[in-house]
Image 1: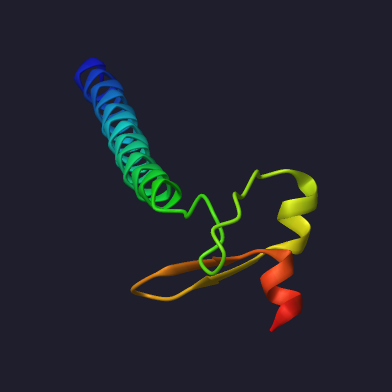
Image 2: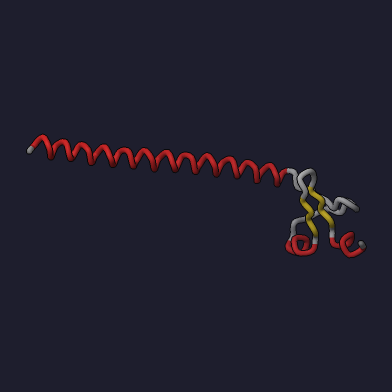
Length: 89
């Protein structure tokens, strides 16, 4: 009976270790995925225009600009249009 209970405990420990390994692997994969996505976001932000694509007015990023400027995103380019150019068209 000692062998069975010893074997049973060993089996439980083994199952717990497998669960721990699985969770560690899942967490590692999530971290790697997060890093890839953050890199993609940082790259997209670095490509963001700093001025109006039509009249070259500087985009300051203030709440007023964020509310009134237009951003058009396509696969090939990002077009930032100021309030004056938007209202003028």
